[in-house]
Length: 297
Image (tube, rainbow, N blue to C red; front, side, top):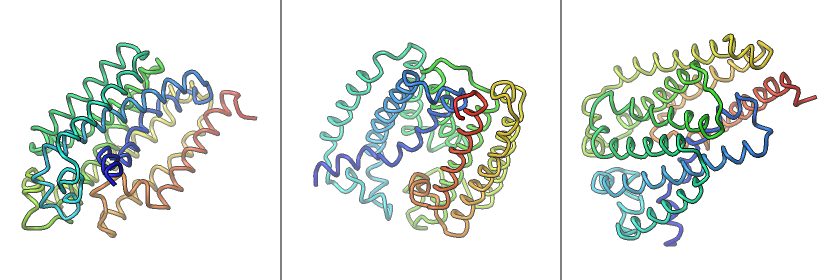
């Protein structure tokens, strides 16, 4: 049971966010190159280790606030099932593993990984209490994942990909804040997250509309951009846009109608329509990109 609680402390479900690291690999047409794939996998696990260290530190800092949350009170540290001493020991072991894993990565990857770590620590200590800026720090974390994925395999990044990442990460962050505000215990919601005092659902919905629109437009423009057409020798990537639109609409349905969204990782790993949509987007993207590069029939 103790081992399971230690594993829970790592929040492995949240590692799904680190899949953004593979975006440059996919769109650079390098998915079928074994050595480059290994570099991306190492980058992925390095970010998984680093993000888990951040989660442990965050759980230690937030243990008192988590105790008054209807779900977070069951977290290993907040519930008292894992001591702070053992949590710090686990974080130290993760740090060593992450350093060993990333030992052969280039200096630029290390630089981005350190920025990611310190930005998240700064967020946990201070920024998460500052209205709007808290959302941009969450977005920065996703953008750093994409940049790290590109640096790890040494490929250039499209400006449209960066913009799409910014908007979709803002969309997820705003959706999370809305769910926290709507689903939280009215008496304890400010204790759980003080920044929620500065938000209301109307304001969050307005921002989310902008973020959702930005995601769709930037992705659509990327698929028909000169760089994409030149790289993939086809304009067919535009046919993956409906999957992105459906994904955004489905997520909005889940947070507005089903009242979900406080934990994006749970939605993305449990909602079957979203999972099927993501798989279809991936398969069709691979077929279009890699057929155009001569790798598929």
